[in-house]
Figure 1 (spheres, rainbow, N blue to C red):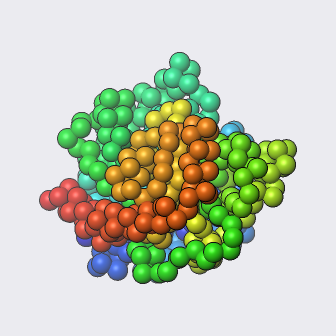
Figure 2 (figure 1 turned 135 degrees about the vertical axis):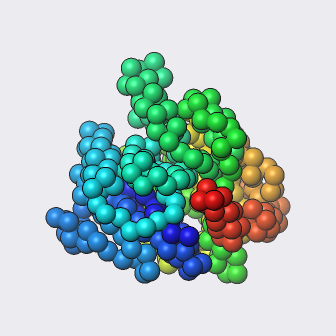
Figure 3 (figure 1 turned 90 degrees about the horizontal axis):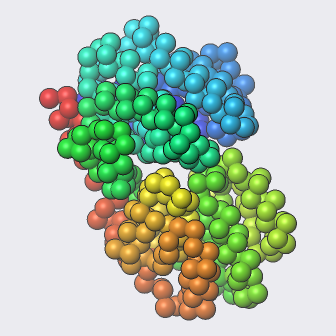
Length: 399
């Protein structure tokens, strides 16, 4: 197949789509990518990508075109212009650049959904099918920016989202609860929505990440640090159980709320219990999985956004780590179905404190959880299963 991928997020920023397009290329498909300039790591565009440098680039066998954007920097206003800029400049490229022949358009649908506009222009211009891989719910995600449903802006975006969704030939969702939301809120036909969970790091399955006994119970949270990730609940929970000896919480990653959560940790004098390690190269993550006695998963449950199954969950399971979580929706369901750990409802600080205390005091009792997670991963979240399913879905659209 000849697949044209549209994604505002791409290499050299660290996203799952980077590896996925290379995996598809390795399976014999021709992959072209329309993306923006990188800006996630620092909020600014690196010097080597400014002024349309590397406008036409390659990631291995994958050919890449980059639309100029306004860097996200800091604050909601700059983020808005960042989103708007890719919609406009990416749309311009979609309409006026002469694109090589392709069979299908694949949108890697991170926030905001407006990043699909260039793909819609491509669909209309070339009369090709459009596949949307939904990783974030819109307009629901606006609630993370404190924009409620009664706000006129929310209602306007809701109308726009319906218009965007009606152009998709198939929508694949990463979490089953997304189906009902997309059907009811965006008026998208249920029969055109399929479940396609993200795949995790298969190479973790063969590695030995058994934690060495260092006399400390080490909890590791890995990934993006934003308000949706509910890190403040981990901090509040740690404050409740801080007098229990022999445990440490490691926060590995970066994001828009990291500085605020670090400040909150210091204000509560928890620096000896919670360590922020910042952004870590992927190759160095092995060290943290070896350190972890259990991994933490928290998501804000105040909206449907919290029903998602973040890809870090698959990483935790492939590494064979027990999962301690305060989540709703798909995340909680997977933990309960697999038996890979302990889970309470999102935002339940008392409950999270209880299960963390339980794990600290009875770690050996949960020694089988990691292997249960691995087995569940093998049956549900491998790369081979994901790519085979994706190929079948795209092939059906082309036919």
